[in-house]
Image 1 (cartoon, rainbow, N blue to C red):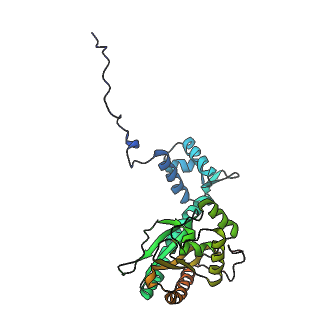
Image 2 (cartoon, one colour):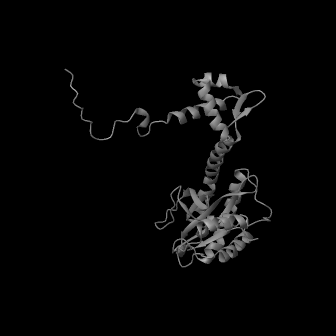
Image 3 (cartoon, one colour):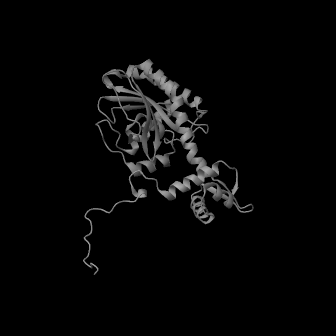
Length: 283
């Protein structure tokens, strides 16, 4: 006689499959990346050959390629029906190359700045309206500025942020201000677009920016922009430290050092500083 008594359901969450465990690869994404890696080794390849190389059915490979094509990571030659790497894959890969080249190239110049000034040297980029710190050489002084790599901040209260904003077109700066605003952090923070554009005009003229306790009370920072091969400002280098070690006469000495370091980093990555900026934020 069969036992029709319902079995009790185990309490708790059901066991996860291997693919659902933390850290487990997402199969579709894993296979798509494998397609890209394999395709990158060939100039052009047919669907059947590519599917054979990665060990998946041609129909599956075709669906994945269609998604990658939609985002520009692969391209299909309509005449030959051969697939190749797309421009978006180049752009994404090249961004890593630019970043690593920049950080590595800037390091010796940042160390030299720290040795000469006794203060912390920083390297940062602009991203989505923020300034993002990507590298730092710390001072040995007990009181010093510290920004962990990946730290984000408002551009209008940052030395590097303002150095970069001064190279942007006015419409681009206005767009950032509409998104981020001009919040006040200290009594010296610039909190109006009018005051900010006036400051950016001075920065553009002299080639370096000053954060005069605008983000943190008692801290000052001098910064200058770094340019790529198209004379576009892609990063900035700065020296920062306590105001007591950054009086006006010290800034007058440090600013040319920072500006020179920015120029040397620019040249080390194959960049070119613009002879003049016809379309900066001050215009």
